[in-house]
Length: 181
Image (cartoon, rainbow, N blue to C red; front, side, top):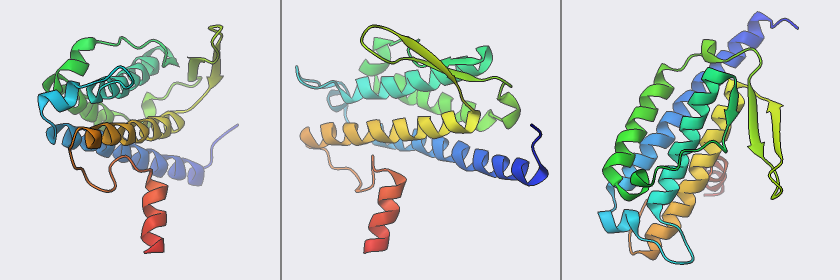
């Protein structure tokens, strides 16, 4: 199936929108971390993981994405889970800046012809791999990052930190609330 010029233009425009949105989500994570002290970043309880753990998780997904672009299979289960990232706001911030640069350098040409995403889908350990696209995975990373920012915001508020109203809100929710105002 060949792609027409208008379809190519649309895919390119969508790519650039998604690319910038993921870069912006990384920046939002960096800004979020800058509002915390070390204890706020690493504090956890028996019931909840730390803001650092959620940040590390977000970064792990981004690293899996880039590794998958190289291999043709994005495997979000293949996270390295470096504890040092979740214990050091400086390390997390540095990695997020690095992710921003990598997303900025990304082009549509980085998409493999037969890109797949693979993930464990049940508690028996069954993995499923399905076809995907660069744009679809950028959209997933954006949603995933915003979702974890929302959790991180709740954790930060429980620790006494006050953050912006739109931190961790889906963009559709922000637009809806603006329309209702």
